[in-house]
Image (cartoon, rainbow over all chains, first blue to last red; front, side, top):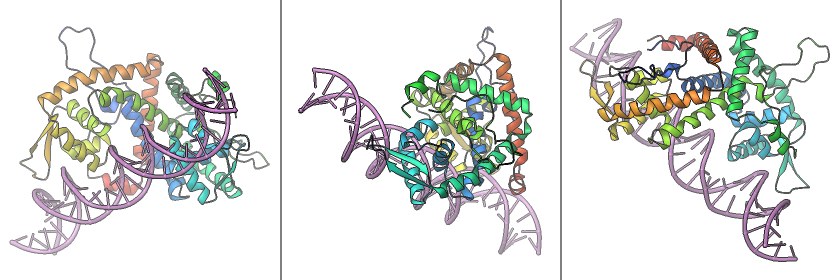
Amino acid sequence: MPKATSGEIAALPREESAPKKAARLDLFRFMPFRLNRLAAEVSSALSAEYATRYGLDIPEWRVLATLGFRHEPCSAQYVADCTRTHKSTISRAVTSLMKRQIIERVENEDDRREFRLRLTGEGAALYEELIPRLLRREQEILSCLSAQERRDLGRLLGKIEASLELVQTSEEADAKEAY
Amino acid sequence: MPKATSGEIAALPREESAPKKAARLDLFRFMPFRLNRLAAEVSSALSAEYATRYGLDIPEWRVLATLGFRHEPCSAQYVADCTRTHKSTISRAVTSLMKRQIIERVENEDDRREFRLRLTGEGAALYEELIPRLLRREQEILSCLSAQERRDLGRLLGKIEASLELVQTSEEADAKEAY
DNA sequence: CTAAATTAGTCTCACTTGCAACTATCTTAA
DNA sequence: TTAAGATAGTTGCAAGTGAGACTAATTTAG
């Protein structure tokens, strides 16, 4: 079994060296692989809270989190945009959450294609019960980092997110300010 | 549309305040969500290299990367352990790569349950062609960070990776103690 | 005003993947 | 030596998901 990952980034052999060395890539230092693996591991650590305990899958949890965080009802499309989840996936999560009466939806009088989604009382109660658990779990996972390190990590990820345009710029936010 | 993500960690309202405020969680500051989304996005950015160009999927790429990095042939089980990918997934990737003559396998005389996998000449050539592209792509993605920031990121992720391995439950630890 | 283009949401299809059962082989212990 | 248990790898099955077609409603252009 290979050694645990070090802090280094996977590196190409010296570019300018004369004898064209064969390129090699250590998966354990390759950022895309590390991110994938870490995300998978963290997700599964958290799913103990919302999956086994409340029977929610990830898309359902994302709908719940979006509706619980925003207080105004919002459309399925909005949830899909926010969470970068495919609209068909959100649609299924919405259907399932409605069946379980965790959320409800009302027709939008102004645009009868879309529905306004919001938590039911039951859904809000579930949200209130679940959130502290998840935040505690997140803190546990991050407890190996100092407060400063956590800030640093957040900032570094934020830079990458911004450069990949994962986060909304203010103009985009304005453009979508229809909500 | 919600605000752009800051460098902060999702936070509970002050714990000790008298009127029990409703807990809220901003998905955009919630580390598990951010990791998931970032990993998905980075993966898809990279897949342009190995998927569309060479027709490899992620499991196939992981097999290739493992065999290319190590020079001794190794078993499918070893690849599965290394990459934390389910053995059935690796099995299918191996089958597909063999059909395409990118890898080959030989029986292990000492243990006829397992096979020794290694790259064919063609596979090695593919590896040599692909690796520089992927490393370049990784560097592009990380180009929004300074050299110091990249080291920091690697170190922070490394700490979380290490702690998650330590944090594995005792049953899991026992189960994996075969290694 | 009407036709074309756009958008919200649903649904079907194909594909991927994890689980668990299964075969074959190896190891351990009575 | 033999039976029970562990391990490598394969395969069938079921659940989840993205792509994209489709319906219904709205907006835009001519």
